[in-house]
Length: 282
Ligand SMILES: Nc1nc(=O)c2c([nH]1)NC[C@@H]1CN(c3ccc(C(=O)N[C@@H](CCC(=O)O)C(=O)O)cc3)C=[N+]21
Image (cartoon, rainbow, N blue to C red):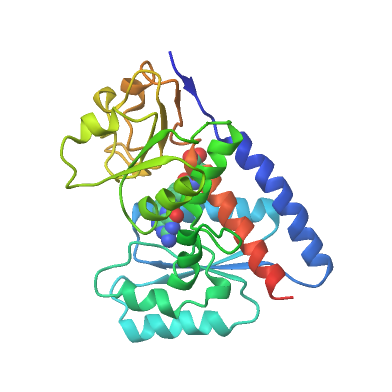
């Protein structure tokens, strides 16, 4: 029987230090503020937003949601981001992704101010992550995966880590961060042949494919570690991961659950980045 890696404790430790920083800033007259930009009503965006606002309250960060209609045109959207860029009361901007197709992400990513880009969407910030320089903003979900590995002393140096997914929000930046820590990284995706065999050859499997309970025991080597990045909502409206937890828990050594897993730390990393932004603007 494998062990469940409850990540809420790690998130809690994180949030306590964020609260201290936030109160320090407030004493200096700075009110750390995050602007959240949501287009439409995607379920995963709304789940994230709820988590963010709940934790903002806990650590005394102001979270302001800018909800846009899913048909908002490119000009209006760009105008909103530029307003947030120049608004001195805003220290961090988070744009939920993926955006609807008519809002061209390849243009928008250049518009968000690198100084406020708390999810590292701007290529200027992302380039540093890819070079192995983690001083600036790192994308929150990959950073959360790395924090979890550190928290639970999961040894990845020289180990084979299979990353399932190659998005710019998770798979690609995470692969580079793992590489920095000397993992041997295998990036798998929708065109990968023999995905089951590939994943089952790894010491650690990170699932970030966005398909509810897709990863069964066949994908996991006996004794492997499984990190579930997926945030899906199932038929019953319940939060679930990309991993079929019940199927995998007996075969793996360690598995992160959903909820109580990566998502809880993602929110904490985001708020830490807002503090980083607020400190930068002093
Ligand atoms: N630019 C961008 N970056 C993202 O990282 C991103 C995104 N867009 N779009 C949506 C997805 C989804 N996602 C979630 C993270 C946490 C919870 C979540 O539920 N967090 C709870 C805890 C959940 C748990 O206990 O596991 C909390 O913070 O309290 C949900 C969803 C981030 N994403």
